[in-house]
Amino acid sequence: MKQMKNIGIAAMALFLAGCDEVKFNGSMNVLEQMTFSQGQDKTVVVAPGQFGAKVTLGQSGGKKKIKLEIKNADPATTVKLEFDKNINIGGTFNVTASQLGQNFDLAGTMATQVEKSPEYSTYEGCTYQYPQTVCRGGAKSASEAAAGETLAADASGFAAVEAVETPEASNPELVGDLRHGPYPGNVAPPHTPVCHTVWVSRPGQRYVRYYIETTHRDIDAGFVQNGKTLGSFKGHSSQNETVYTYQSDCR
Image (cartoon, rainbow, N blue to C red):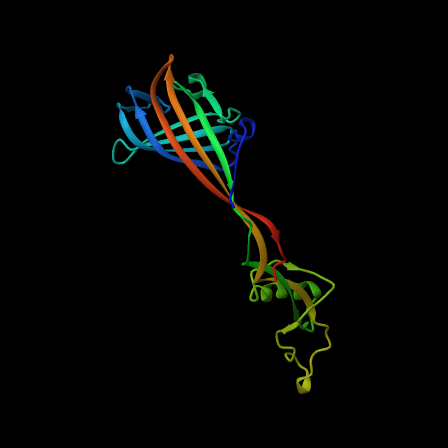
């Protein structure tokens, strides 16, 4: 059975970090002509009416950002608002005109519910690193440093991976022809092969257990000027997150 739990006001405050975004689909009801300041003496005017709308809440740098797309035209009218990242939009919020850089406040509520699915289990694809030893015979006049440089060029033919020296070697492969040089009877020159280990990416599988956590948010926000509502937005957002409770090794 699915479990549904309400989130308290303190816990449901919307903390947006980095590139996280929350997207709402809903409607915009403009009661009186609204003028949005968009910086550099640019404004966007929206006439009264009821329109489909989308709102995206996000954060960039030290600012929280609101992108409002109002479908009163084709293409939709886009309005961008921003305010300090430390101002939270939670259970009840009020962002003042001075904080928004607009001639109205943004006030409203946001109800949040989290739905947790049953636990599932499956096998899923993964990638793991496998050590492979690569060896090359030394040339009569070559130093270890020169052999190491040649090995680095050969290793790129196996995989684009980082070469790592290791005291252990598995599945050595001899690269190059040891028979070159003035040695009779195809006898290898008396030089010890130089060996390195490269880590090769290989596909694998792992066993996992997980559940899906779905966060539902309903926002009801008003654009208020001197106690009078100029317009409002109502919207809903649903976000899914996979939460792993167990992951086996990839093999």
